[in-house]
Amino acid sequence: MEKHKDKLYDGENLMSFRQLVERYENRYKDHTAFIYKKDPKATDYIKVSYLQFAKDIKSLATALLDLGLQGKKVALIGPNRYEWCVSYLAITTSDISIVPLDKSLPENEIKSLIARSKADCVIFDKSYLPVFEEILHEGNTNLSQYICMDDVSDTKFLSYTALCKKGQKLIESGNTAFRDITLDPKKVSILLFTSGTTAISKCVGLSQANICADIYALSQMTDIRTSDVFLSFLPLHHTFESTCTFLYGTSCGITVAFCDGLKYVQKNLVEYQVTGFVGVPLMLEIMYKKVEKGIEEQGKTKLVKTMRKVCNCLLKVGIDIRRKVFKEILDKFGGKLRILIAGGAPMNKDAIQGFVDLGINLLQGYGLTETSPVLAGENDKYKRAGSVGFPLPGIEIQIDHPDEEGIGEIMAKGPTIMSGYIDNEEATKEVLKDGWFYTGDLGKLDKDGFLFITGRKKDVIVLKNGKNIFPEELEILINKLPYVSESMVYGKPDPKDDDLTICAKVVYNAELIKELYPDKDLKDYHDIVWKDIKEKVNRTMPAYKYIREILVTDEPLIKTTTQKVKRHEELKKILG
Image (cartoon, one colour):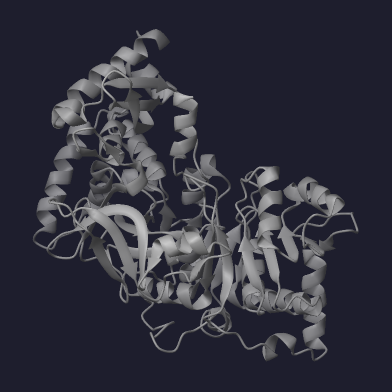
């Protein structure tokens, strides 16, 4: 199988997304770039070749230039779909700045970000027609062009399809506007609003050189092949999915399959014969719990445990029989799944090892929107339990003012780092100092250079005696409980002694807890959870880390579209 080894970015000669498009039409032109369905119930599949993808990018780009958008800003909003990907590259290869927006934003936030970004044009999915009709009517933004990805009868909005056809005709008639564009790879042209888990969202300014540097670094770390099919279900507006699956993946010639929705993930894995995907720990942990549950229901827990030990012993002498031994389990994921890339939060070690034991390579990574996004990651050869790997090629990571355990704020330097926050010099100065980006995350480096994340600096619970408690450490232990979907640990002010009480909000899976405790009901669930926390969490910790109070519910925590818990909103809800 062909592996991606050549360089897209060589350190000195910064390259732009134009080289990606050239690669599509020259190297991968006959490969399938995308496969998807019009809706989850459809039985026919739409396949798009890389050659067609490149043609569509150039056609739309030519039409956008014909609208006079060169040097301006275009916002992009919609679910993961082919037209989103075409639009992204048509915009960015035409000397136009792009503003990808979160598809799950409420209407008031869409209006706010459109205004803040000063976008001149927007390309949107038809589900957003009502909000853009309001924006057009109110006239409080810079928008002068509205392009709908779907055919609509309203003539106030331009048709994506019609523009692509127009662009193609312009090219056929000799229009060279797209070909004549010269891009500056170092120019800030990608404006990304952060998820705002703790405060109002900031606008991150990235260049194509930043993202190309990350693509190159990723190519040195992971074994991605032209035969791979990656499922895309994390939102494409976010740099994790956009860089890792879309841009890096297509630079390697993979096929991108669009997920029909979270409840269809397993079905899509099977029907598209998916070999890999990028995910967040919460989803991967839920997947693994379902695997464990299925094994238990078949009465094969003991057998599987024994065979894992056998397989791991054989691995030590170079014999790998995992995928043959666990074929029945792997077939539930389509039989081809071989690589999972996790990022965004710490992941349960048991789930990591569980996937690896089945013969699925799970690689953890770490990064932020401000860093394009990946700063560190594991590769196929070098891993360490609990770590997120080591700095990517070209990235330098240090720990600022480490304590006696070596823990301090993670800071990074390299070509993937943003130039700053747009129109927010004060916030930029807080995080960019002497060429270093201060991440706001706490972690440590071991003697071999592996990076371990301990939590967010602002989330650390500091007790009156000076002891630090990292919520994530306790949450990982709570989330191991078989009926737990997710949890959040926080400090509650105790007016009696002017200290903090360690508390946890535990979200249980109603179906699983009922199966595990069929003779119990809602009023008993608190006692069940409390007993397990005292015995399986607190007993593994020093007394100052003990969880003293719990809230138990089946209502999901408030999260961003990339499944990060919005702690500040949850705390407002809990503490009032």
